[in-house]
Image (cartoon, rainbow, N blue to C red; front, side):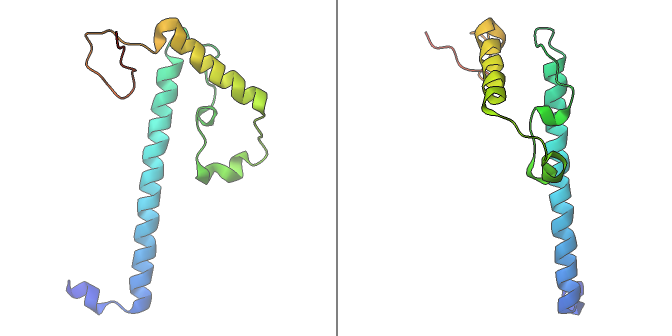
Length: 111
């Protein structure tokens, strides 16, 4: 606590700025890890075609704007992606066994 009182306003705001940057990078890293794991889990399934070649094909984050500013996705591409997701669900890859415990990733089959 003594260190806090010894800081000048400039030092305090610099420490605050560096801490905010640290937290932002930590959150970005966690999001990147989750996206990478999701791509791996999608690509390991033999039914999924075509395989995702790039991580940002699954999801793009706001901090990646400079890298994707020239890439535009039209309505037809969006529709094709949504139809492939719906097709995977209809083919049984999005359902679960009735005896399995419910999860947030699998729909609950009601009879």
